[in-house]
Length: 76
Image (cartoon, rainbow, N blue to C red; front, side, top):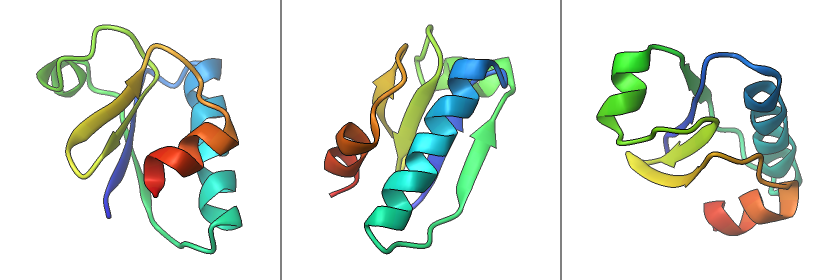
């Protein structure tokens, strides 16, 4: 599984990344999280509002900080 966090590094992007890490820990999974900050790459995903979560190349959420529980549902 490949997980990417799309965003400029703003506070919401950092909070989303932290929530993803917590969710993975609670699920007992060790998966590397890639941070994508380049605007061109973010636009290539069709995302116009960050932060966003991309799992295996598919945008799962954008424009909001998902909770730990919501992220666990996404990653199931």
